Amino acid sequence: MNVDAPRAVRPGEELDLARLAGWLRSQGLAAEDLAQQQFPRGHSNLTYLLRSGEREFVLRRPPVGSKVRTAHDMAREARILMKLHPVFPLAPKVVALCEDLAVLGAPFYLMERVRGIILRGTKLEVPLSPAQARALCRTFVQTLAALHAVDFRAAGLTGKPEGFVRRQVEGWTQRWRDAQTEEVPAADRIAAWLAERIPREADAAFIHNDFKYDNLVLDPSDPTRAVGVLDWEMSTVGDPLMDLGTALGYWVEEGDPDELKMLAFGPTFLPGSFTRKELVDEYFRASGRESRDVLFYYCFGLFKIAAVVQQIYKRYAQGLTKDERFAILGLVAQLLVQRAVDAAERSAG
Image (spheres, rainbow, N blue to C red):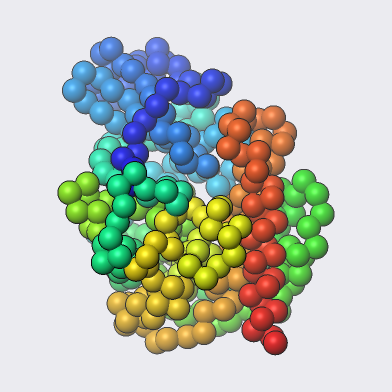
């Protein structure tokens, strides 16, 4: 288990502390002896820890040089959290939002820090027992089901659930094409397969849209208990089974190929962990929703994750980031779309 500790800011991603301190003072927030560190493990928006005396804030802003505006809308994300936190306390509490580009060159917001353990990668500093791993899987699924149970209309959270699945398939297909750095025939095949099999919407719920282990903050004294859920940049109102599909796309299990295990986003195949089928069964039990075949949602989840990864890789290929973690992401994206094709073709067989 790893405490998500901040580190020195990566070169080229430093914040202008003088301008930031002036803005903080204008908001009535502490700004004396302002210091910055960076949470280094995320792949999308940039996340920093600010310290001013005893006060701590977490700052989120878009990546430097990103032109994928809809994926990095800080004002939208902050306003969602302002409405969501009162009804779903695991969502972070926003402290302030800044849309003045003169401060940091991009919109950003501050939120209260959520301290805890975040599971990243597949190697844990302190192992979980099989019983703990299983309990954690149950917490993971039940947290997702609890989010989907939120009365989003009463909370003032809005969206367009009608036609959501089709828009998602078409939108992520276009995003993949826009981010391509080379031809990937498997991506074209799975995009066509998805477009031909758009299911009717299950119902409408507020969805996270990127739900995985490393967006869950766990209690250090009980790593099977969630104390926070992070990274709401893609959250919206839509079909909850699309949220489930994304979670399944990230979920590597014990019987999967070694290359998938090597690239897993979290330790989902520890001894005692759920299989994808067990995850699905637990979701339908916890949510009370009618059980349905989830192959389409799983394949979509893999394709969407591949498109997100490819967007990040393109920034690296263009030299817009020097983060060497991103060098392998082009191959990761291809592996994910091939995985989706394989799953679709096995079902046809």
